[in-house]
Image 1 (cartoon, helix red, strand yellow):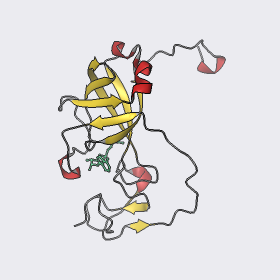
Image 2 (tube, rainbow, N blue to C red):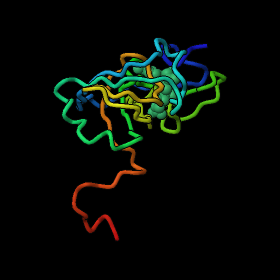
Image 3 (tube, rainbow, N blue to C red):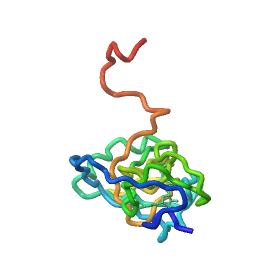
Image 4 (tube, rainbow, N blue to C red):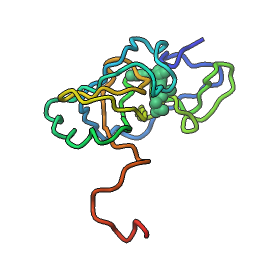
Length: 163
Ligand code: SAM
């Protein structure tokens, strides 16, 4: 049976030839270091009590961590760089039963962005030690945000925000 990183299609899966040009660019702000050296070793979703992982920021983005240690939980966005990007229907169990890509959290998607809510353990200079990731070692890091559930906007109130 093909794994999620294989170029082989499983029974019932459908790939497309994307018509749109790839016209957006993402700049990676760093690299994620995890103990997971193969996709099979990665959990399907991270565990907040899992192993320590390290978000290594590029030096030019280190200042952007100012204020981050007041948050216990963060949302981390990363680029699942080993994924194929052309499947519209996927068969997660490999049994021919298919589900649409947008109804899955599979790494196989047109723009392979992964999102995990992580627990911040500590800051170590331009690195953050966190728990709760599910990605391969050396996965490119896209963004870090305070966890939405506890975040209070720092910018002034707008009418559109409601009461
Ligand atoms: N938590 C993220 C989400 O929900 O958006 C990702 C979930 S995805 C199911 C996690 C799986 O992606 C892992 O179990 C592994 O099989 C695969 N994976 C991890 N890192 C990857 C990478 N850099 N490139 C491609 N696949 C990866």
